[in-house]
Amino acid sequence: MDAGLLGPKDVRDICAALGVMPTKTLGQNFVHDGATVRKIVRDAGVSAGMHVLEVGPGLGSLTLGLLEVGATVTAVEIDPRLAGALPETVRARQPENASNLRVLLQDALGIKTPEALEAATPAAPGGDFSAPITALVANLPYNVAVPVLLGLLEIMPDLRTVLVMVQAEVADRLAAGPGTRTYGVPSVKAAWYGEVARAANISRQVFWPVPNVDSALVALTRRPVPPAARESVFALVEAAFGQRRKTLRQALKTHYGSAAAAADVLEKAGIDPTARGEQLALADFVRLANAS
Ligand code: SAM
Image 1 (spheres, rainbow, N blue to C red):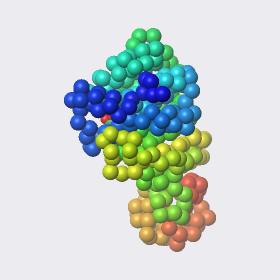
Image 2 (cartoon, protein in one colour; image 1 turned 135 degrees about the horizontal axis):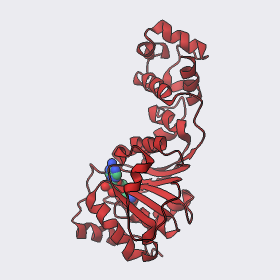
Image 3 (cartoon, rainbow, N blue to C red; image 1 turned 60 degrees about the vertical axis):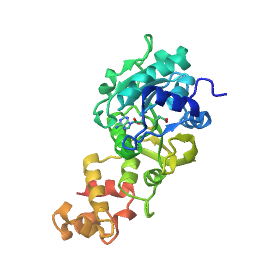
Image 4 (cartoon, rainbow, N blue to C red; image 1 turned 90 degrees about the vertical axis):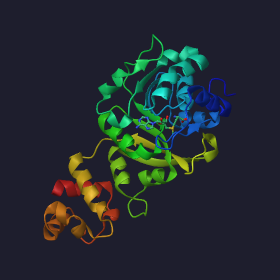
């Protein structure tokens, strides 16, 4: 059933052949379950001809699942041993799709423009990577998941849909709404780019090595950015949550120069100065930024 995808033995064998000891620092937990891979590809809505960005392809578990349905994949991997071996893994398992993959050896946090991806090397001649990248599908390295996700959404306006696997707590935080314990800076910033939904939990048992945290999927569907300057909104969000137990009047004191000035702007935006940041929705922060 999993012809072309990586099973538990494949994952161990490839690591052994490459001399790779998976590291926590790089969040190297590799998926070895074809059903999980196919679920991610299906839930992400990936279909033939789509150009998908994958961050952290690792041994290629998800990459093979994306290629299997006919997608074109640009993959960004920081580990030179993994980036170097990926084309060969694909050629060995899905030779017919090898030309639909290109790999960039790079820290995803260092990608500052979509053009940076053009330095990726095709796995085999003949691929067409000219279509815009419209989807991000990845099992993200957990320690950099949020900055990688938000950074790519900011620089890649063609990115319409995202389905990423992250640490379950991060999935909760990204998808949280106002007034909840997990609501915070990542929730508001992610909402700036689109509608975020917490999706399925993923069992620890589908990874090698087995991680010591739970994992979950998060989906984001792009919507038009709100009518405000992003930098102003994000600065307010950071100030408001920087001291999340304080009233907004106090938390925004430094931002506006004084508590009285903060209260004035808050009232102008129709926000109670004694409210706390965690009660504000993205739309409130947008109004506040525009009232400043
Ligand atoms: N996609 C593979 C899978 O599902 O089995 C591997 C996922 S593993 C959780 C994360 C991958 O991201 C590893 O291959 C790791 O080397 C890579 N990685 C870690 N930090 C990175 C970064 N800053 N930029 C690009 N890749 C990174």
